[in-house]
Figure 1: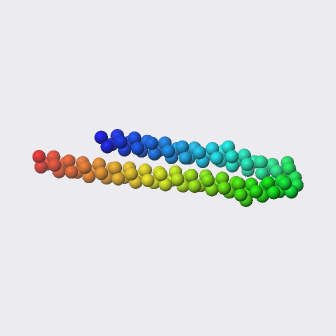
Figure 2: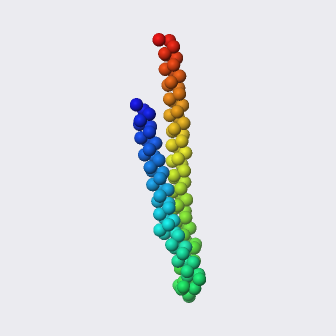
Figure 3: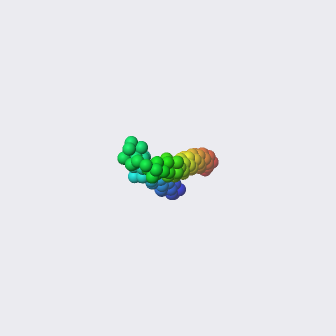
Length: 110
């Protein structure tokens, strides 16, 4: 009975982890990567002047580091959830073994 519930819970948590990792990839692929590309083009001379310098400085010192931080935090969440799931799986295995041992003892008595 409980085995099915645990499988369901583990499946849900695995899905959550996959969604978090997917969101990190989206931030990298759709936002951070293209911004780095734009900064590279500007540095290569696509835009010159004080505005270009300020834009590049802002991207490199504020925006991109914030995005990287968001990705790192989310990756940390995914790792923490993964560790928790593994602990839950260990606990479930230990409980199953203990219950089986108890059933074996009762089986020998009766």
